[in-house]
Length: 389
Image 1 (tube, helix red, strand yellow):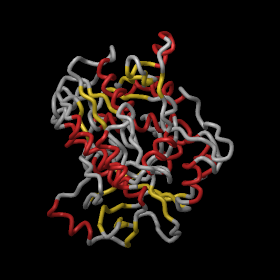
Image 2 (cartoon, rainbow, N blue to C red; image 1 turned 120 degrees about the vertical axis):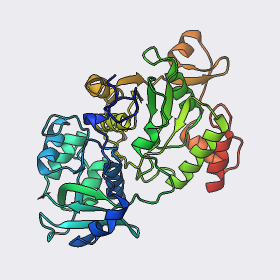
Image 3 (cartoon, rainbow, N blue to C red; image 1 turned 180 degrees about the vertical axis):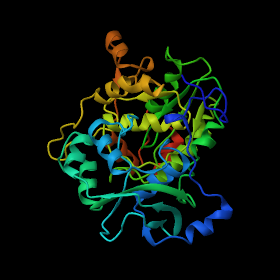
C-alpha cells in the first residue's frame, strides 16, 4: 500500500495519481467566477453526478472533463493518454452545435448553479467505437449502449471545471476528504459497492470480508452505495437511502462505515469494476469486494449475460496491484437450515439443506403483506420497503 502525500492524513492510501483534487472555488470568488460565463447549460442527472465527483476529487487526478485525446485513449485501452488507468471516459455531452472552444459554460442542475466549465475540447464521438471499447458490445439491449446512443448528446466537451456548489440530493454524499477523515490510519479499508437495499446475505458477505487473509485485523468496511441513476427497475434512491440509514442504526457495528456515492451506473462489467476501484481508492479504500458478474447485465431479448461470471473479478484483480489496492473475492454464500450462512461449497460437501428466496418471491411477499423470513432480510429494511410499496 502506498501512503498518503504530504498534507493528507498519515497512513491512508494515496489517491489515484497521487493528489486528491478539490475543484471548489473559494466562497469569496464564486460570484466573480459565475459572472464571467458565456452561456448557461442544464446538466442531465448523469452529468450532475460526474460534475460532483470531479469537483470533490472522486475522479482524481482529473481536474475537469476529459479532452478528446484522453477520451479516445480510455475507450481503446482503459488508460488516459498518459497511461493512467481509467475504466470509463468522463465527458460532458450536448446537442448544442453552437458551443465553441474557449466558451465558459455555467452548468446548472434543478435550479442550482453547480460549476463553470471552460470548453477546451469539442468533438463528435464515434459512439459505435465507444460502445464496443467500453461495454464490449454495440447492442442497444445493453443499457449503457442505449444510454450513449439515445440519451447522450451528439457532441462531447472537455475542459477544466470550477465548482460552485454540490447538488442537493436525498443521499447526503460526503466528499473523499470527509470520508478519509473518518478512517483508521494504518488499517485496511474494504469497500463494498451496491445499488440495491442490503439484505442478510450482503451483510454476511461484507462483514466476513474483514476476515480475509489479506485484510488487516483492525480493518473496517466502507459500505458505499451508488445514489445516481441506475437501471429503470431499481428501487428509487430516496427509498434505498432510508433502508441504509435504518440498517446502519440497527446493526450499530463500529467496524462498518457508511457513505454514499454520487455515481451513475453504466453496468459495464469489467470496465465498471475498474472504475469503482479507482474511485474507492480516492475515498481511502485499500481493498475492494468483487462479486460474481459485478455490474453485469443481460440481453433483454435472450436473457444472455453480456459478461462472463468472473470477467469483472479477473479484470479488477489483474489491475489491482497497479492501483496499489487488493481485491477480496465475493463469497458465494447460501443460507442453510443447519448452520445458517455458509459457502455453497461447504453446504454441498456437508449435504446441508439450503433455503432460497428469489427476488420475485420477495417482492410478491412484500406486496402481499406476508412475513419475510429474517434470515433473508433485516426487519428494518423490510419496514421501509413495505411503507414505500
